[in-house]
Image: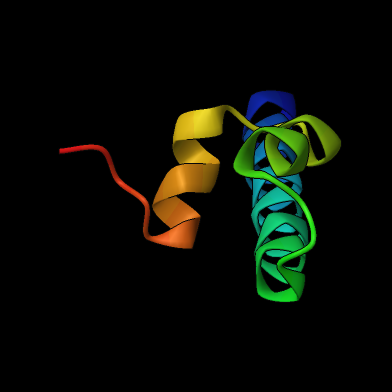
Length: 55
């Protein structure tokens, strides 16, 4: 049961990090690298959220 709860908490934390990164992207005042650092996400994830996928 603890493992299930831990997975749910981890999933929720990632959702919050992504939401935070999206808000920063919308503001447009930081670079992708700065947003990744502030949100605690990999740069690739932030690029995907911003629609800047590398081909």
